[in-house]
Image 1 (cartoon, rainbow, N blue to C red):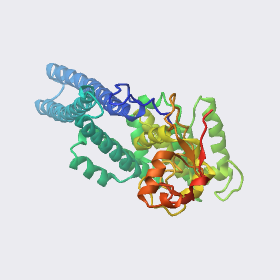
Image 2 (cartoon, one colour):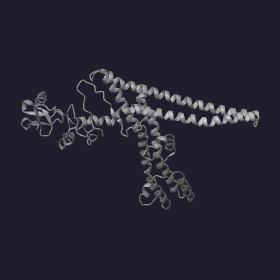
Image 3 (cartoon, one colour):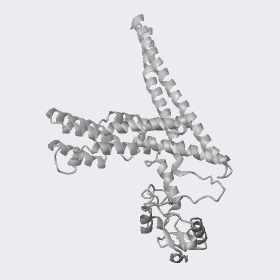
Image 4 (cartoon, one colour):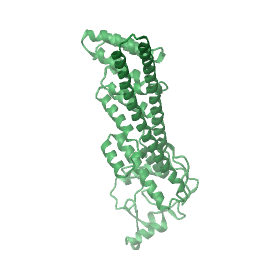
Length: 409
């Protein structure tokens, strides 16, 4: 959970870096642009290594007349077909680059617009905040698997370039495939991001290969055991000491059955390991794109709730009053049943200046109010004439002599 920033002065806009909530807005397209450039470089290098030697061989063969004219033309036709395929791939990469650049420009403009809003009271700030809230909602729906709803909301509000629909759609597809017991898509993703994964400490590819080995060992067919040994030699052998320990454990699985009670083999054979792989992929994917694992909406809510939280919000008084019937028109967000549990582990708000009313009193239920405002509410309710006061939050009614003055030391 993140600690809340110090609230800005009234009417002024604080233009500070927006932390985890807005950093992914620019980091994701930057990472995608870097990958697109690397893919272009690999494609050019691969085609160059094929075409230049092929063209040289065709030229030498034509000069030396070691091939018939038809054979030479066939070689040239093959090279032309290869070049057409290369051109098409380059055009696709160019379209992707153009799309990324458009997204980056729109996102910079969105963040830059905040610098031209003079104060929080300006109507433009409300509009900007609404767009930001829509971004957070789309992000939350994408992470929760509601891809179609997220797409509809983004399209309706015209913020497709401000959210990462394609990124999360691919991520969700691979995540679900792992939960179904399939590794093909995840391994393909690992191959596409091999260079970036070398810097990761999560060893996703090794865990996926280990799972494929486990599926071979799990089979009752003796031939599969032999195939598993060959597979382990090809994919699991490593010089890293941490993985060597896992390799030794994998070797021990050859002499055990999947119903073993011995750990760690019981866990390795368990079907729950697919859930572990799915979440490992999710964490690896988000780390590579500098995306927080937690939804951005949760981070924003945490900051807001922490700025309001006081020790009373999770006291015995708050717990008892929250469950009681209430006729209140306003409720503390922290004490509400919807947000109370979410705010439980957040830090308390830190205020350098006290905002407690000078005539503060405490009611028998532990709630503190301004005496003047409380009496005014009680008069409007027709209770003051009878020496009664009403708690505006819980609706409880007390005698005036039950109120006690609050002293702040």
